[in-house]
Each structure stands twice: as structure tokens, then as C-alpha cells.
Image 1: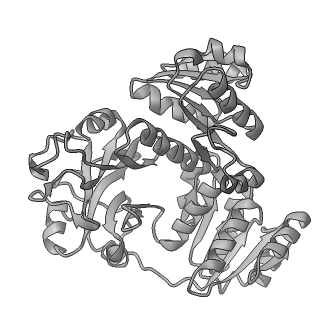
Image 2: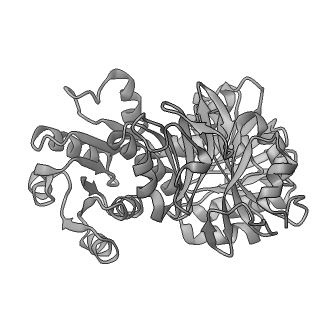
Image 3: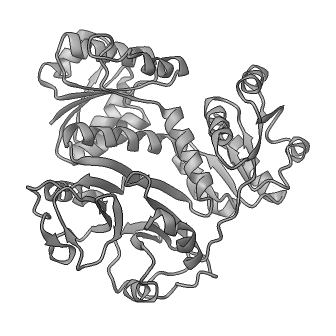
Length: 454
């Protein structure tokens, strides 16, 4: 498949890395020649310097015979015009655009992006994706990573194993025997910085980060088995009242269970806008690093704290202050991936990476457009692995076989199978039939082989 990626920043580079690694013909376009050079030097891609919205630049990028264009520059307007030109001049069938401005997102409901208006097949909103990720982190604060699958009936959990974890030094095969009613399976383990798909005789050790795939109803028990407690969240403090913080507060207000939330926002205009838009949320104007203001927000009595300003250091330091004040759960928004290793030593419980969230969302839609059977894709770590959810077609080599008889690559593990809306534990004797939904953890090098199985 021939793909043009407009924008060679972190998001564009990561998408190019994924798609070129899957043997696609990828061309990267950016008006910064240095970013184009970085992409062509480090990845198996072609590069064209120039503005993505210029027809002659897209012509040089091979738009005449491209199958898909992904507009992920820093400008919403450039992304929109790029998709329009890709459609009107070059007849590119599949168009994905990253849009940030809330006004453009509101226009989705008015059919602005229909083929006969402004032809964009998929609109990706980084801030909306990040707000959803923040809500998922709050829903399972004991996990450092989480994502929903199978229509929300199953969940991926990332759990760090501490010394008080009851199942350390226990072979995974034995875990299955000990907790045979628990609909959960360890599908990935990161040890000493290396991520791998574990075998049945592998053990878990203190310090491991393990990824589990579990039934929604078994999340609390799964966390308990792995030494984590799931506390109720009745009070939440949000540092940052921009679009992300405002979206999270709105979602909290819409929950059936009443949650007392407070926002701390440094910018007066943003604070006033948040105060006007929210009904039950208290908005405080000031610095999220101010200990007195954090105390006024009740950080010592809060069940969780979420730092989502546009400054990584503010998010990290306000999370550290929240923990020092007695807040049990602190979650920080981190744009710079080099800061992530500092989360543990600083005592920050979980983080949200906006770029990784956006990349996962774009890749999910790329696969949906390319393979209609793929329902969801979630990227793990630094593009090291994915969890792919797909509907099994009747032509698949998996259809009609038991899991133990399917020739999965070494770097792949099945998390669960959903039959007629019921999520089932992935055991060897489970038969996979056409139209079942299957979720598979797969290392990056084995993605193409798993896609062929699907």
C-alpha cells in the first residue's frame, strides 16, 4: 500500500516507522527539511520537503497513485486543505486528518466532513483521545496503562509488580491452575527494559511490568491477585483547565456516581471558560505548583490527582507535590518520552503520552480502512508491540481450529475470544469460529504474520 504522511514530527515519524516496517511504500512530507532528512535517514521511507497543502508537493510525493494520505501536521487548516486537494485533484480514496481545535470537532455533527463537503474519512482529535485515556487511567488508577477492548467488555491492564505481589516467582502455567475462574491472562512482560511475550513456564519477578488482558467484570479481582487495591474515587483534583482538563471534568460530571472534582488553572481566561462550562466542578485560579493552592483544593483528601497542563515539568512536579501531601494516586501528562523513566523514582503512579495515544488512534483507523476485519489496535511502549482486535473471517486459517492448533508466531499471545457478545478466556481447547472476535498481543516484528492469519 502506498501511503503519504504529511508532518514529520513525533506523531508522523512514529506512524511512518510503523507503516514502513510493515512493508508499505511510505513517503513523508514536511516543510522542515531537517525533519524530512531525519525520517529518510532513520526509516525506510521517501521524503519530500515542502508544504503538504501544495498540489505540486503532493504530486512529487506520488499522490497520483497513493492509496491513503495521513495529514498530521501542526496546523488544522493545512491538514484540512491537504485532504481536500488529495480528494479533488488526486482522487486519493482514504484520508485521515488530525484536528485539534474544538470548533472543528464540533462541526463533525453537522456533516462538514462528508465527501461532497470537506472530504475527510477519519478525524483524529489528540485532545479528545488524551481525555479518554485520562478517564481510563482514573478508572484503573492502580494500573500504569489501560485500554478497553471488545465493546468495553474486556480491558488491557499494565501493572508494575512490587515486593508484596502474591504471584511473583510463580510460573504462569501455575497461575492458570490457581485462579482457573479468573478471566485474565498475562500477555506481555517488560523486564530490564525489554518487552516480550511470555511462555507458559515463565515466571514473574519483582520489578516486572506486566500487561494483562482481562474481562471487565474481573478487573478488581485481577488487580487484587497481582497485589493492587482498587480504591473508590469520590474526590479528584485536576491541574490544568485547558481542553483536556475541561473534557475530563465534563466526563466526571456525567458519571452516574457523584464525584467532587476541582480544577486548578493558571490562565485566567481558561479558568473563566472552565467555570462557565462546568456545573458542579469548582475552578481555582492559580499555579498548580503552589502548595497553598493545592491544600485549598483539598489535595490531602483527594482520591486522585490528574496533571494535564501543556508543560511536562509542571505536570511532574505538581504530581510529586500531590503525592507528598498524601494524595494516593497521581497521574501526569507527559509529552517528552525521555522523562518517562523518571516517573517511578518520583513516585508518580501513571502517565499519559499524548503522542502515543494519537499514534494508536491513527493506526487503528489505518487498519480499519485497510482491513475491514480489524476493529481496534493499541500500541504498547515505543512501538514495540500492539494489541490487535479483529473479527475472524471464514477465510482465515484460524477459523474452525482450537487455539492450541493455530500456528501463532512466537511473539504473539491471544488475550481473549468473544463469541456472540460473550468474552471467553483464551485456553488451548477453545475453538475459534468465523465471526468470532479475537484480541492478540503481538510484538512489532510479528504484526504482519498475525495480520495474514486474520
